[in-house]
Length: 385
Image (cartoon, rainbow, N blue to C red; front, side):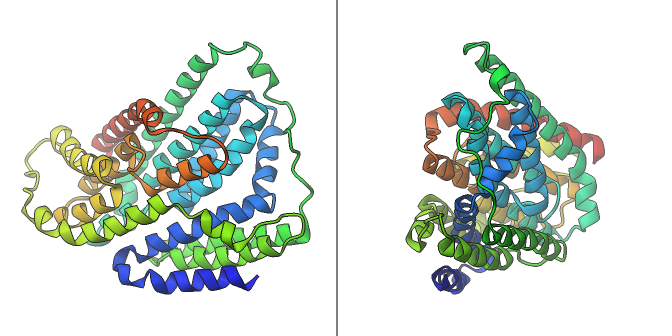
């Protein structure tokens, strides 16, 4: 039980040289083991069973899951939403077909990414831009609330439309069997399982408080992961080892953060020489241009180095300009599988669950959601600016 705690402690010291991205790397190293531990303790099955007991249609289950991931992303950051959403979504889809599993994996990716615009602490990209530009919590929320709502609604409607259209090519009885019981009913939670759940909930609440105060949420989640992972290793009937926990860490996510740390230094010069959008340019032109810069950087490289670029370019910019840039880094980044860490984590967890969302299939579907989310976010921003 001490091995997970020792691993987390070593990870905390090992990430310090990364400077401003140390917290992000710590999340990459600790959130997947946290999700795997909760799954091993039965919590993914318990949460999935609660959704199934609502006796919703397949589409209703998907909408309920997507809405939940939006809320978790906004309150507890998109990376937490991603690692919680995928195991639960795959359990919900376990009595259906392969397409349903892909739909729920897509809902997890969309919900976690799209819900990350609302608060400054919902995404590390938000924190980087808000810290660099010095805008207040209230000013940020005033600019972000309507773009967030419109983007979330538009993506949700598109998800339902595309899911229903896909289901038309399947058996017509699919919707009627959605309330069938899980193939593997969730076991009655033990005292250790309940204790780990309480720790996870307390950690999440503490992270919100720390985030609201402007602190780093990564150590909070690292400590939570150490305790929950220790419970999973020690639990009877849930065989999981420290080596398996370590293998859950996505090497692609580690590589992206390392590259972002290098890019933070490399982007300083170009960002300083990029001309600002003149203040007399109409918002209907200027804000989409700002979003386009952030979006292109995010889909080409990743949204973390894109945020580092924006933190230099947008110093002294208005809240509307900052949110416009984040619409690009947070929403348009959905278009590529490496655009955000949440997407990387989700696809990794999906693969562990037997659902392989290939790069070609991902891009073919994702660009529509990225375009719709970004367009509706910009419309909302132009209205409230």
